Structure formats: structure tokens, C-alpha cells
Length: 170
Image (cartoon, rainbow, N blue to C red; front, side, top):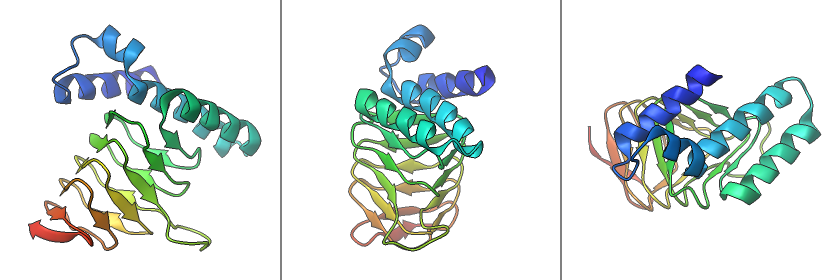
């Protein structure tokens, strides 16, 4: 767990020019707090301790403003910058070295059963206010512009913007 936490802190130090020290990031960044609590709740969720896992995730949400369902799979090197209003759904999967800005939703589109949230690859940047909806795949090395609404797969090494999101660079 400490190795993952160190990767998260190092990624934040590399990608947030406002981060001045590792101790500052550890103590003051809601992104780190939300990820730590998510890892605890995800562990309990996998042990089928659903109520306790959800309780921890809701307490974390209250404190950080970042809601990550305990069932979501989150990689290492995650930066949820200015994280207020970020929502990550139950079947979402987020790769490594991903930056997610405030107001972003990785959500579902209805009451479907099974996989209903996005899968996000490695080295992805998701702009503020973006909605990524449904069981779609966001490739690696992708950038998604602020306030985009992504409803279809985005291939590796692409940039997508707009409502609905369209690929503008590949």
C-alpha cells in the first residue's frame, strides 16, 4: 500500500506545479486522502463487506468532495486535481498515471446490470467538468477537453473535445 501511495504522491509532485513538498501533498491534498480511503473501502468491498465499504466511501466523500465507489478499480499515480465533485462509479476502472480534474464523472447511463461505467487507460488527462458515460473504453495517452461529454470509445493517443466528444487529434 505504501508503494502505491508513494507513486501517487510522486505523480502529483510531477504534474501539479503548486505541489511544493511530499509532506504537503500527503497532508493537504484531498486527492491523496480520497485514494487512501478508496483503497481501504475497495479492500473491504472485495471481502464482501459492502456496508462498511460504502460507509467509509461516504465518509471520504463528505470530507474530500470526491466520490469513489468502493467497487471501482483505481490504478497508481492518480491526481484528482481540485477534486470537488468528482464521481467514479462502481464498475469504473482507472489506469495508472491519470489526471482527473474537478467536476468529472465516470458514470453509467441507466439501470443496466454488469459493466456500466468507463474503463480509462494509462497516462490519461480528463478535463474539468467532463462526463464519461457508459461501459466505454478510453485508451492510453488520451486527453479529453474540459466539459466534454464522452459517449463512445476513444482510441489510444487521441484528443477528444465537445458535446458529444469528437476526436480532434489522433
